Length: 434
Image (cartoon, rainbow, N blue to C red; front, top):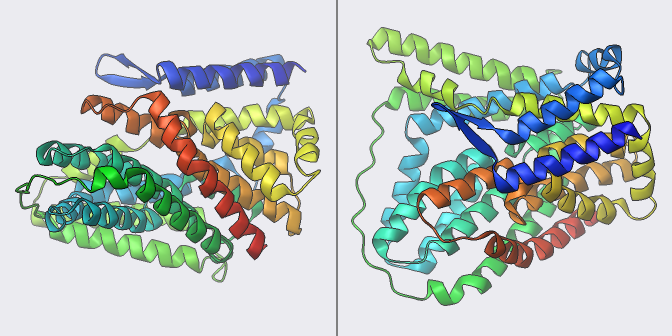
């Protein structure tokens, strides 16, 4: 009972921290309040004995794909490659090219932007795409004297919908799929149809919501030429991204764990660029900037939540919740509940919790339905409230910096209009394939 009470208090506190003040400044540093709270909750559980240290150590060092350390290596490897591509100007170049070629038509701009964001998200990371494209959209819309909200929300929805397609699109995909031992190819085959259903549904609803605004004329804007100054580094980065994606796709056939592929590729990228820079006597700025931008706060956050879930698992609380969710069709009970829970405690701790709640069901149909449904809930839940995902927290802070009027109430209104139908369409797609 003590573990359950501490876990609930921690979850509520994390929600309030994200909602009220997700960060606070200490000199030049920005510290996340949400991971500090989760860390405090984990420490309390450890001190109280709710999680025996040997039980924690056993799970942290387990030779399984659910090992949180392996999951962090996989996530940070893919994130490092995406951030590096951003640092050498790849995403800025694409954003500028989109704006330049579609500046005379709002509808054309809207459709093209949604497609580009969606495609990039599939192969990189939804967080990086959102954080890169958002400032460009804000600046362009201000110059063109048009409402930025349709483009910003479409960007956010596109990034958090198509991130479901591949296992590397979202850390929640990585965690839950790794927990269930699902390989890259199997994941894609099961999630292709639900993602397409969700993508089409969300896009149609977005067009219906914003069609009136998109019909208004826009001021012609002279976009600046965005050049790639360090083309050799860009080429190396793109090669590493392609090689990593291909190796992940065949990882189960070559008996190589995904965390080794992602981590190894990221290290190879850094070594190759380092040698390239030294040979050409160029600055190492992109490498240093990449290391600075990695989301290190995710490490204590994920491990803390892992400890909290272990305490619930040790006390058999997760088993009881699992039985309740599996009393009916798990695609809908798990999918809908994970959608809402993501917006209470964030989608990353939700994924850690649901991995334990769903349990080790092996290859059973109900077990796989539960895992994939939780993945869907974790991705689509991101655009119901800003609390749903870390990307939402950062996205809202960028909008405030650019003085874009997008209140919490407005976020929920749009999120509900798009989120509920998109969630149901994705779950129906999953029902067809499993």
